Image 1 (spheres, rainbow, N blue to C red):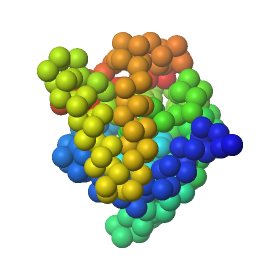
Image 2 (cartoon, helix red, strand yellow):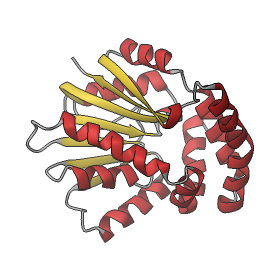
Image 3 (cartoon, rainbow, N blue to C red):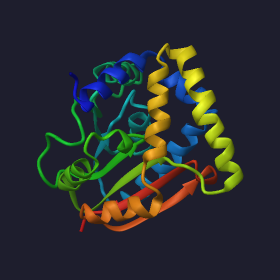
Image 4 (tube, rainbow, N blue to C red):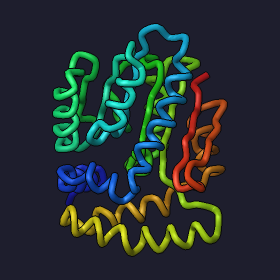
Length: 237
């Protein structure tokens, strides 16, 4: 029987060919705006670092990786993901953009990152923390490879607090999203899984406490699009 980590890798391998298309359809392209805002904050935190090393965890098909490399031209970006198919698509994007000399890919998970302590000037995770098989271990592993005084940036979907917005959100996520996901990708379970992981993700105050318990300091967050998405920033002491 496959472990949870293996199941997640197989699922993302299966939907990899349609992943980008579905992301943009299902979010009405708002996911691009969310990434840009998070990467702007990442860039601001690195304003005094001449040649930053950045790790993109759970990079998927490298949309965030590309955004980071384009926005921070003096950076070298490392990107990891457990899905080999996602990484293949990401590598194809990088080759077309002639950015292979600035981006390196590794098939790896957040819970076991093959880099030395205090390596990175920043770590970025877009829509990936909810897929960690062991959230606490993954966050502590990221803390380990961050340099002191450097930050983790987490971009993650969340359930909105407004009653009306939440009602629309629930209708969409529980009914429309799995249907469209099945029609485009052929895998209804993957988008049921997405809905489930978003619903089960900790509320902001709880996730902030989880980050603090993992050893992070100066933890803060901002809501985007009525709370449909949030940017968290947490620092290593």
